[in-house]
Structure formats: structure tokens, C-alpha cells
Image 1: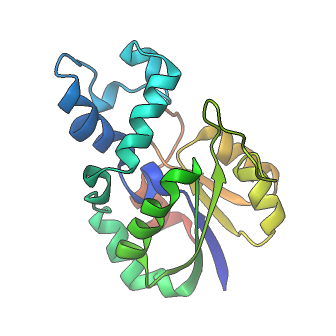
Image 2: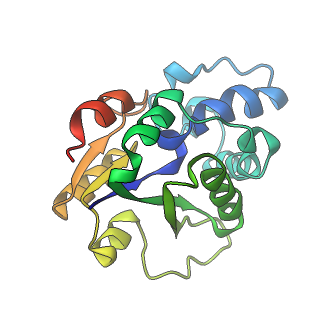
Length: 192
């Protein structure tokens, strides 16, 4: 049985879109940035704020009712219902430790019958030591040595996984180039 390692934010859910439209704009009604124009991620420069201010907002969102209320793509749920049991699934995210429990809850709420493994690489935050042997997702994937497929929205993560010999797919988002739609990946790229 093959193993798929899935990124959570912006792959299993629409985290950045939800953060911008349902969280950031609530407190920043003057914001004119729309999701489709987020051509770089993190988008702090596009918003005219510091990286630290963006990360503070993002982490607060991750602990919010808006994040908890995100729904997965219905086509993704349909695929899992039809083909999910043919694979092992691992959720892998990069977040600060204080925001991991809501992510685990979210994954289990929507994908619990398919995911038995959840891992994270701690994201560094100002004033917090990383305190983890894996500094990035590639470090974790190298240690794991079990992934057949890796699906992420971050070009660097996908390239690093490919360099490890893992068949990897970049989910198309406004901030990356050359990706595939999630629908195309699940319907046409995953072999059985």
C-alpha cells in the first residue's frame, strides 16, 4: 500500500483564502488585496505589514472559530470516499506548536477515517526556539523514508521532496507557478 503525505493548509483546506476573507478583513476593512492577487506567500509585503504582524495574525486565525469552520473541498472528500482506503495517509504541516492541536482536530473531524498519522515541523516564531530535529518538511520526509507521494502548495517543499526521490505534486495556488489543480492530482496523477 502506497503512502501519501499531505500538507494541510492550502491543500486539505483553503486556509489562506479563509484567513484573508473571513479573518483579516474583519479587522482591516480598508484591505483591497483579493485572494487571487496573493502572488507571494507569505503575503505580508502585499499587505504592507511586517512579517511578524502577519504571522501573529495567521497564528491567531489558526486558533479561531473561522479556522475551525473551514470545510474541505467536496471533490476531495468524494475522492477519499472512493479511493482513500487504497493508500496510507499522513498529514504534515509546518506550524508553531501552539497552533497544532486545532489542526489535528480539523483533520480528524473531516478526514479522520483516512488519516491515522499527523506530524508537524515547528515553524519558528520571534522569541521561540525551534526545538525540533527537523527544520523543514524535507527533513521529516527524509527521516520518515516511507512517502510515495507528497502533495503541498509550497514550491520549495515540493522540490525538496522530489530531490529525496518522492513523487511530489505542487497544488496550484496564486503564489506558485507550474502547479496542478487538486482535482487533477487526485484524479489523474495518483497511481494505485
